[in-house]
Image 1 (cartoon, one colour):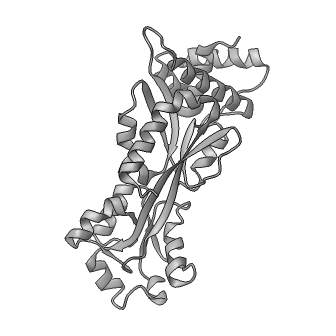
Image 2 (cartoon, helix red, strand yellow):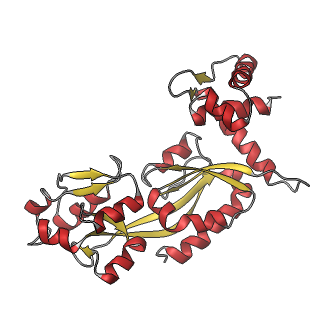
Image 3 (tube, one colour):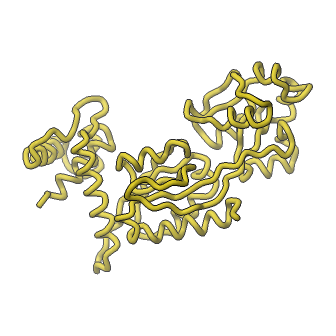
Length: 288
């Protein structure tokens, strides 16, 4: 039988990246955290945490953390007289979090959410490694041991301010102009701008870019004429209506299908969240 306070210490060290931060989360001393992790390593007979900056779990440590997360989630779903909130770690893309996911999370009681923000094209990797219990992803095919639910389409448009377009694209988004006009990308994983260029100009184009890891920052950057970028229509629509934003090429959306993937073993415990996500998606996303 594994000691669950020790497992909690292991998970906290891995996710906070340091023994002192884990101690602050658990309300104990760093020495106590170290003792708990060491006791668990002695019990298992294997190194569970790679000490460094940050501290990270070994493969064996990750398996134990996954087991601990699943047990805590399943226990929280039991009809106990004094239930404790379950800590639930999920991966969500920044644009979904900024536009439609928060109401779904607010509709679920008894859960404390630990949100990992990553691109929808790679968020599935967090589920594959067991770092999260569920992920909003662009990949429809479920991983082994997981289920998937279709959510809908998040529509993007290529937009910029009228002043930006007049200054950088007076003759429209031609290939020569787009190689000079500054754009915006969320991170190196963000392929939306390149996909739109390939879809509408025939091939990918290397373009100068600002890196802005913020959904609202993207919108603000476009409004202020900092650059052009792919904006969720949910965020851009009010500014299109007032004329503060314009599409680079009218009626050229880029649609991104989204899916909710989650570990099959925890499906019953995740059911309230799954229902809330589907309901929020029906209200905000484009569905068939």
